[in-house]
Length: 114
Length: 139
Image (cartoon, helix red, strand yellow):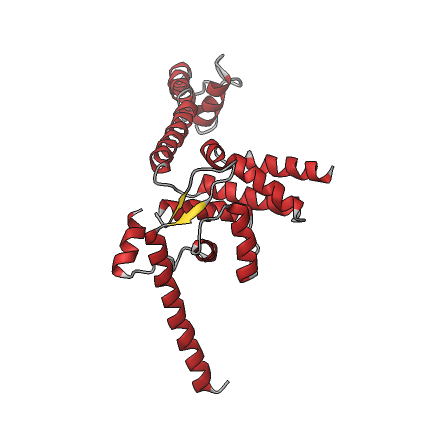
């Protein structure tokens, strides 16, 4: 919980070591709440990664403990999950960091003439 | 038929999770497995994913689990200590008893002509072993 709040304030990239699944889940939740099945389907579309259900719930639990997502009241048997404000901030910080790394990589490829 | 077998397989994998996890995610996870099987995802792959998740759930330390993990560690340590004490406890009185019964002065003295008894004194099995090791052969 506190980690998520801290990440929004001081720009620390808490998702750096969170794993690919956690980042993909946050990206998928960025445009609105979803339940497990929808998350798996969308992550497959976005990234071509077929997330196993065991991996999905493990990552969701971890993100929830960090306060980056929250589960909403169940409709039928499914719990939709929603990204929290600290979650959105952490995702922004992480994507910025990825963009910097990506830009540096492209620049070096250009300079190297490869 | 294959669907129900797949459901049974994933159900078995889900039963490997801790009870708290099953209370929280169990129904939803079972339904998710059903939907994935319906979409053509192999049940064995889903069950494997759930089994790996269950292993992580049991093995990874959680803030709430720290106290119980410490208690478990203490219990294991206490158990190991208890076993060690239990193994040593019968040997100590046996050694004490055998030394008092063996005529040490007679057969340990080099000049003594008293014969070393061929059989140990009538004592228990553990005492026999100790008698043989401590007196019957070393002198």
